[in-house]
Length: 300
Length: 322
Image 1 (cartoon, rainbow over the protein chains, first blue to last red):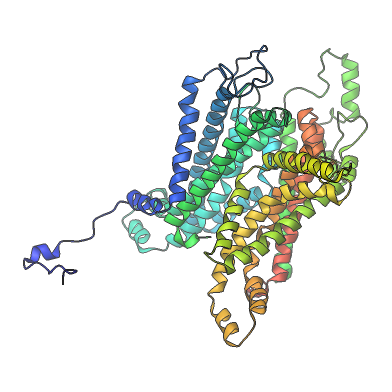
Image 2 (image 1 turned 45 degrees about the vertical axis):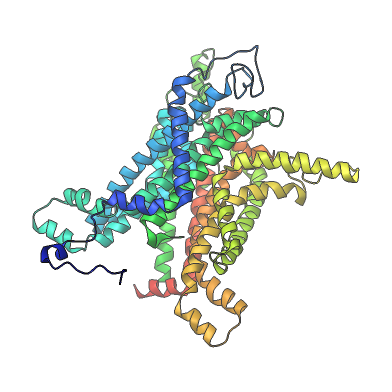
């Protein structure tokens, strides 16, 4: 009998709702928390972000050359991780590279998610000819590999960060647009959309206030999954000499410089390569965890 | 009805190619400066002669028409670095090498991924499944240029060196670079195909897991079919369709991946020329090759979509009903 609590005599007590209200964010966090791998990845990512942003305060001299102290091994005085072929401190460059790569990843992923959601929302809600034309445009952009568009734009317009971010944004929104359109097509027939229309809500109000918030789960998962893709693309472009160019630093050009000195000065390659690969791994694992927590239908 | 679908699909592909060519042309037109802007100013007569030779004195509409017709005739422009070599002749010599590498990587990635995915799904939540899932996640997390450099060192220098010491020969087990016999292709193929392998594996695993609980699998079991027959004829054949749809994307990924792999391993393919053209600012070459890659990929995607209609009877019938 100890397992059961008798219902109190008093009616008001017995009518009290037992289930506590749990907000959306809290609910998602509770589910994510059960996945130890995802939490560890999240902690690691926060650590990397701190390394890049707080570190740049302590190690700002990433371009300072010292030709008397080139290829210093890790542990040398003044250069805890060694120096490169122009005597620049690898730790400072790693901090700068992390900052640049992470900033590009977060900025571009955010812009892409916003553009893709609004575009997909409009196409899905308006339907008809607008949907047809908008989705054919997506088909055309999606059918050409992203990297080819990126290289073309960076070659023709100009190299440098603004073009790089613009180019990455021009190609990255299409997947989100398709995803959100699919979601909106399902949601627009729901009763609450009808009641919003009956109450006289405008089309864009319905898209922004009702449709997109209800499709937020797959959008968040998509956001987390797209960050490593953007960082990858930037690294790839930097590696072939179209992305962030020296003396500025990013994971891609640090790995490229390191591979030029490979295998004589192993640390120049392994430090950026390891940090880069581990962060990619963490983003992928976190993305998987978020998908399991937020979007159980999409489980792989 | 099928014919309608084919015509529409071909139409979209041709439109895509037209858009790419047009956008490239007008982007190039808007570039400041002229191709003959050197360190020292050239005499006006020389510039005029050069402009006339390359047709740059004509109005923009006429130049656009000429550009379009050149590409239709397979002329992608002339390199400014390799004297007297046009882009088309470079494509002719280097593309077979790239295609050979790409096809190997695609076969390795797709078959490897399918087999690993089936294995994982059949051993769901057991050790083998966890191990292959972890391998797949690591496979998508390590950039190919990092993996390539590391394997080149580990296998090409260390393991091959050990092999030479032990057997006291000059035989290089894993060659470091170039593209000559089968041995030379092993590491590049592995590195280039690993990403696709991981992607296909994850996809095959999830679609197999969906198929495993279907009623027709129960029927197949209850009528007494053996495990192998069920796995291959009933599960894999139904689960493979999502994988088929991403082969086009995989081709694109492998194509762009080869830019870096060919550089690391000094393979004389198109990717190496492409990256060299970027670093030596050989703009006509970069743009010519980009157009070639884009057109190639659009056609690959088109044939894959057309093949999809042919392979899957459900699609064929659904299209017929419309």
